[in-house]
Length: 180
Image: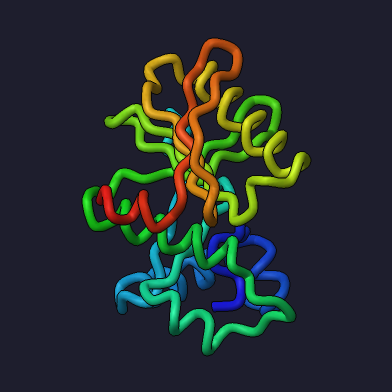
C-alpha cells in the first residue's frame, strides 16, 4: 500500500522478503489481485515474454485505504492522483499498460486500442516537471504513431500545448474524472 503507482520488480521483492522463488512472489501478488486489493499493470510490449519479465505497477482498489494503511513521510498526492486516474480508466477497460520509451522515459498509461497516452503530474507548473512529462509523452507518441489522444492530468492546470507537431491536452483531475 505504501508503493502504489510505483514500479516493482518481482525479483527485488523476492530478495527483500527472502523468498525462495519469483513464482512465490507472483503467487502472492496474484492472491492480492484476485481479492480485489490491487491491480497489476504491465509494461506495454509486443512480446508477452517481455511484458512478463518487466517491472510492474501496482494500483490500489481504494485510494483511501492506501492512504490510511500505507506508510509515507509526505502526502504522496501525485501517486494518489495517478491511482485515481487508473481506477477511472479501469472502469472502462482492462487493456491498460504503462509505456517505457526506447530512451527510458515512462508514460503512466497507454491504451493501445484507443490510441491514448496519459501522464499524471500533481504540479505541472514547475519547469522540471513540465519538461519531464512533455519529453516522455512526446517520445512515446513518436514511437507509437497511432496515438491521437495525448493528455496530461494535473492538480489544477488547464491548457493546450503543441510540441513537435503534437497537440497535448493539460487538464485538471476533477475535470478529467467528470468527462469520464
